[in-house]
Image (cartoon, rainbow, N blue to C red):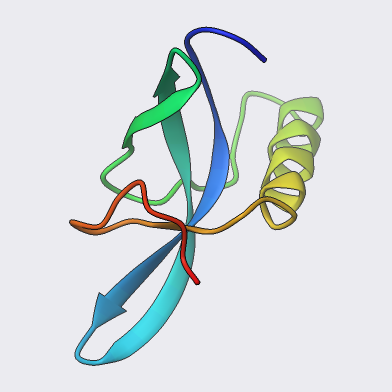
Length: 78
């Protein structure tokens, strides 16, 4: 993809010396990650087809490099 867009990505966060992972929407400008949703996304939609699409995109997110979701965003996690 080129330009401005969004996709689902796994973000790593650190809390009390523990690392945990969540799926967020990440927004890009000129193909660079510029921001993400504050809260992780949920699975839902107006119909079952939409839910299947969201689940597919979430699964695809697990195959992409993980990004930090804290003040280290958009650095890659390890």
